Figure 1 (cartoon, rainbow, N blue to C red):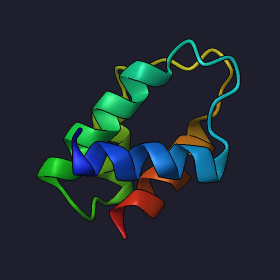
Figure 2: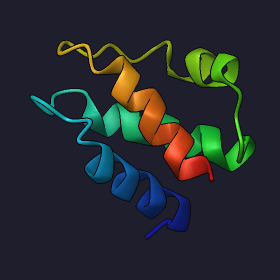
Figure 3: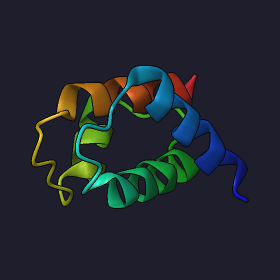
Figure 4: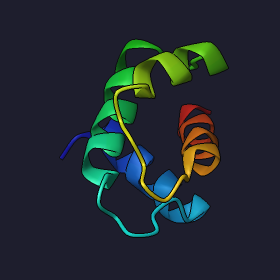
Length: 72
């Protein structure tokens, strides 16, 4: 198991990101890849890395919050 992925998954749970769960696999993989290359990303880097993932429930603010939490 990937240590960065585990931190991201925990941040997702702590922040209650998921609603329907449909997009969460892709969101978590993208967030993990981002944090592996940019351990402390800016808001712009987060938005750029996550732009390809669409969340039908609109939890984008919680996704950003979880990524910020996982980056600290």
